Length: 217
Image 1 (cartoon, rainbow, N blue to C red):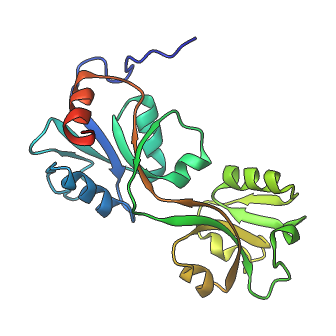
Image 2: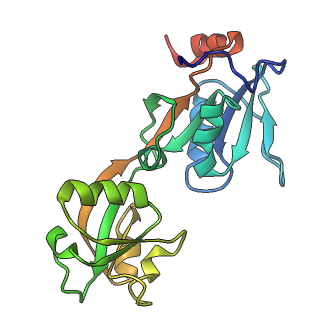
């Protein structure tokens, strides 16, 4: 059955354009700066405030957890959002990428302890790899025809080898400094990532007006 383009979440009444961005983290500041560069002015976030109205357009910012942003967009709870490509690579979301934003650059990489015998991808065979990106890692290992165990953990991935939990890690890296500080060496890069502006597939009059005025010539 073909999916309707009528928003099941927003069809009832509320007609502000909703924009989801990171509540806390490295993309928040640049995300706000991007929308400000379009001419939008939002009220400063104060305390635990999760919604900031736009002062010069019928729109508002939603401050949410980074990993939840694509779900807000996919469901139609928000019209636009800014998220790292790594989140989209990891999960299969039904959203449209409007444009790459040239900030938040990083890479998903595999690294092993500096003193480890693991020097290349092929030497991951039979080893344990700790990661917060199991889907991306699984796809990579399948493409490389490597049989390794995936140890899924939610944070502090770099500690896993030192604690005996894994033989290598698969994690995001920006400068490589965190790997060096934890005595790890990069042996493979799965993909590069940056912040992207994403859009809901659901249509609305206020969304079309926003696109016309701010996003497209």
